[in-house]
Length: 258
Length: 358
Image (cartoon, rainbow over all chains, first blue to last red; front, side, top):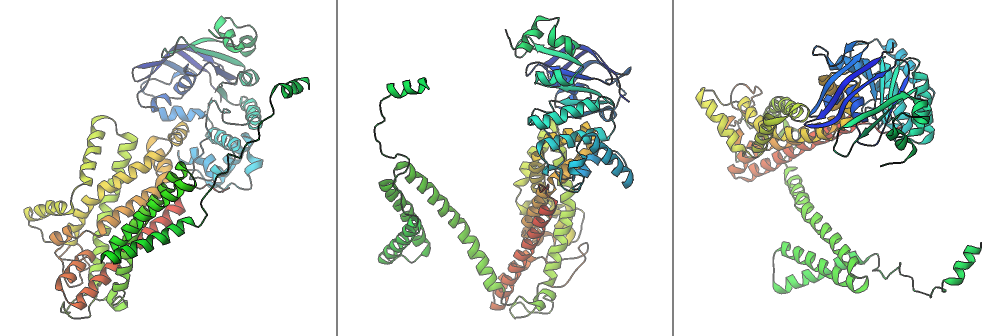
């Protein structure tokens, strides 16, 4: 199921602007890896290069290699569509499809990718909603529009939608930044459960959250505004938060800058 | 506790002051009062000066109203409230100026058109009816309009829709800019020019006038309107929805088909309907390309047809009372046709719009 990600020498560009520079790291399977760092340091951009969503942005361009269990995502014969089926993504703001019901939202990935039998779909939808801890809240109103749910429920709906297609890796771009503490807790618990089955990468601005949910943490930084972001270090979360090997990491985590 | 006592000791007792939040204000009925006074003034002044035109009376009343409101409000309430009231009244005056001609047009058309509008009028053509006599109907023209507009929509809606999808979802660089530019230019093409363009083709290939040729000219007029409105609607679809779909591993074309277009379908339908309303009233290309007839011809590909705008013009030209009545009735039919289409479009838009209920 879950796969290892090996990144080597990866740089990403917006037009001529280099957003991240020469990043190499390994993301272990069945674990949670957190990305922390100041705004604009390229965490989200790097995350989006892991399922080839970066090139959706006009002018987006990537150099380097991303190996998913020895398969290079950026090899010339790789179809980005099949990459995205293998590497799912949850966005910062919950974005359920407004024209679809709760059921259809979860089934969207499957239904838009091929034909499924109705009973088969119903099973997968139930499994995914249970997986996202949302089933009990919505089981009586599966036909109601997804946009009628609360923000936290919508975000869990988006997670259910992402795991319904059975990806190998789940990327989460600040999934809790628009949510209240209770919904955040629900999602953090969920992440803990999901890591049994998926490789999870999460971008977060919340240091406590990184410490709570992740096994490994990567710290990104940029030399100055306009400079490309760089990976400073990646290590066991415990080490990063107690005894990081780079001074900049310690400064950032403890709130000292410059 | 000691802090609080300290503060109380050091600060001087506040001087009694007047309440500054509430000010004097004009009574609630004052706008109506001003309106009544200014209308009375305008009518009086107009009569004294011997002005015949009600238009002058109305404009004078509007002017009095604005001036009166400003002076009274600035005297009682102050400068800022006076400006607020003037802005409000100018807005109301503009609204009334915009609505009055519309209501008057509808009133006249209904009043004069209802006279001969009945089942007979809707189901009979002008075959064998001399223009200056009563009788006859609009059926042949109605058939013509429905078929020509329907065909034009059949050509223009898909072309316009796909062009808009190209511009919003795929178009980059010079080609997209060129397409946008030409769509803008096409929006301004006078209908007679579109008609002449197809007339030249018709003469070049020695074709006969037919509803189909008219529909082609109407389609040329319709495409840019559809492109423009659809483009605006597609731009309103949040990018996050596209990304959410792409991140699920859905190919781009399916994302557009299943996520982007359904989200915007309400607005797109309204845009297409407005385009239809625009071309349904075109007369010039019909005169050149469809030629007009008094007989029922339900085949748009062979021979001359009529259409509602053409029929109105034709009947008005005859110049008898009976033909005037028919022209007004046909105008009413045309307005009803467009109105019904509009209502249908609104219905579809509401039915398909993104749902927000719980």
